[in-house]
Structure formats: C-alpha cells, structure tokens
Image (cartoon, rainbow, N blue to C red; front, side):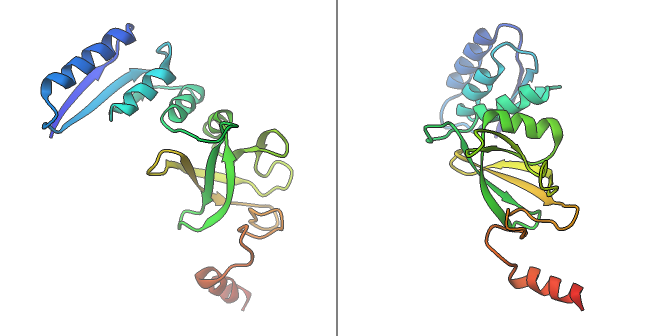
Length: 191
C-alpha cells in the first residue's frame, strides 16, 4: 500500500483536479491510502469532504468548529428519507441499544457543540435535547456511521437525577425492563 498526503490550498477545485489526475496515473491495480489535510475554514468544506469521501479519501480537518465538523460529517452520509433525517440507534458503551431516534444536520452539529444526546423530534418538528425536560440526559462518547453510510449510532452514557432512563416510560431502554446481564446486575444491587 502506498500512502499519499496532500494539504488543500485555497483553490479547492485545482487541488481536487490534481488529486484525481494523480490517482489515475497510479493505476487501478495499486493500493493507495490517500490522506488529505483540509483547512477548517475552506469555502465549500462540506462539498469538498463529501466529494473526497466518495473517492475513498481519508480526511483530516484542521481545527474545525463544531459547525464545520458536523456539516462535513453529514456530507459523508446519505439518507433515503424524504425529510432528510438520519436513522440513529442510541447505544450504551457495552453496545446495548437504548432506542431508535432520528438526527438532522442541525442535531449532529448541536451534539458536537455540547457533547450530549441531541436529536430531531418529528413530533416537535425541531431539535430535542435529551434530558432538558426529563432530567434524563446523555453524555456522548462516539458517533459512528453504519456500513451503508445511511444510519448513525450514538454511543452514550445515560444519566438522570432519579434514574437513568432513555425511554419516556422511565426505563433504561425502549424495549422494556432489563433482561440478561443487566437484570442480574439490578437484582444483585437490590440485595
């Protein structure tokens, strides 16, 4: 595997053209890892990142704001939903699914700004900052994109003043009371 590294300058189109011609001259049999350093304040950053991710390029955005990072992140994923929302699975650090929600471009930016679970509420038609009314908030640890590039996974720690509940029914998950290891853990705590 050959590794090529580039830094984008101010003329984005010229740089992309140079990258494309460089890649075509290497040949399709070669394995090339292409790493591109992108200045955060590049005009049209989301479009550049979206185009480069389709080329299989690894990008490093230098010192981005939450807005630049979030918009660049969502430029690399797609949705087939007419409302433009991204299906989002919310999980614990151990991989237990807490619930299924939706994210928008704006909610992904908001998550990066505050480090908490922020989603798009279809019923409220706007941002839903998990825990603002219930007190059951989340600390965000990681955002992942699935293998098809059309769904997100937020890895969180669920917190709360009285109980750590993700569901509006005051349970940790939207799938009812715990089973398996989590049930055993709760039983042991009660004894």
